[in-house]
Length: 98
Image (cartoon, rainbow, N blue to C red; front, side, top):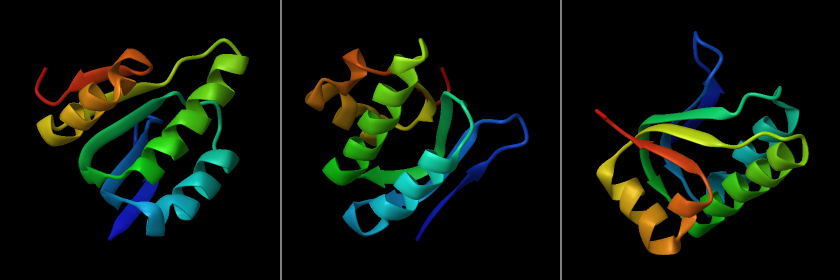
């Protein structure tokens, strides 16, 4: 199951599995979202290449307005995906617990 919504502090909170089956839901939410540039991945268990594409599109939109995407509470599995794909060089990534 995948869920996306606003946290109490205005961050966008992801939970569950962001894969191809859920990427349209995530994309629709982010397209309608405000200029929030911090995504909380504390409850995200998995992200596929389709999910990475959703993040990249959001990042490009933010960069057009001078912003940058920041991902917080990233677990070690998802951090490894970002590192292996080189996306850790594209996004600001903060690992969980640090």
